[in-house]
Image (tube, rainbow, N blue to C red; front, side, top):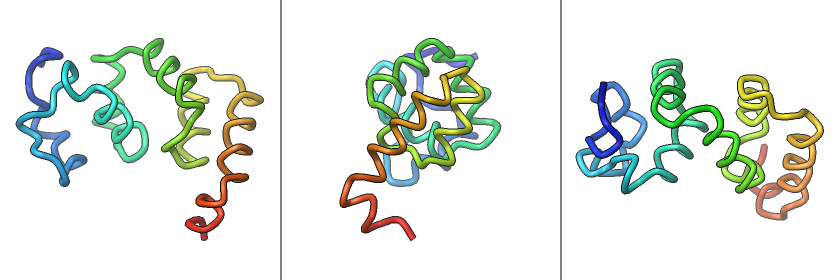
Length: 107
């Protein structure tokens, strides 16, 4: 099992095509790794992330950011997986939709 200070496993590197994956570790790039895998990760990424970060840390991450950076679809998914109250996620999504940038980029 990889350590937090080791490089990402090979099967996760495809999610970080814009980065030098050799230098991404949970110690140095925790925010980037969590954000990218929460938004774009497949089942392999979900399993790895939950095993290495833990559900409490993922809930805290989402709460601190109030869901920013995740699509409403992914926020709903993670709310179900992590047991985040629907009302809380509804508020996060409403704030995102009120943002002019969100309205401009959503189609």
